[in-house]
Image 1 (cartoon, helix red, strand yellow):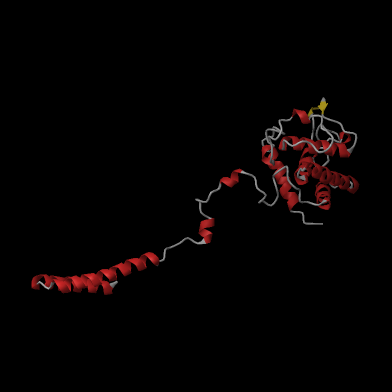
Image 2: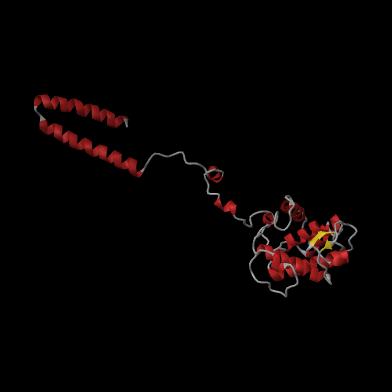
Length: 244
């Protein structure tokens, strides 16, 4: 750049001299040559602009300006899915271990058959068996049945249970109780038709699709303000169990 400044100063001196001496020819020639130099410099600066301080990839990823609209939707990008109409990830053995570890008084046969039923029936209706199983653990106190529902009812999610006088639905077998639970959960999470025969007598009382995720269950499935958080806490604990 100093080069061009020197040339420019020299041009001014010569041009001034040329005006006084009426040597217009040399002045015009010099101006023409220098204008080409300036044009070349401008062109070079446009084609090869000076380097800018561009933010790093890490800065971009951590920027508050990133579009975060997707956070309003529930994606499968967490450690465990909160979407009810989704695939469960835990195996039967992991569910059995989770149940027995929290209630040592449950015999292996009962834990094993329930885990089997939850995986099978949830798969039939497209429901996340991890969520359904954790909800069962919450509603029954890991099958301790310390509330108004008795273990003899095979009611694993408190269907219709509102008081000691109204203890809720009774099912003839554990499988039927599991099916009713899965169907009721699907009623809340989806508007799709049932695949299997209707067992849940309260299915028609639900406004379909009002709770697509665990977080939507609070205030809908149960009045407890911490209901969804309790299920998520159980899901987190279940997720810590390694493959068996």
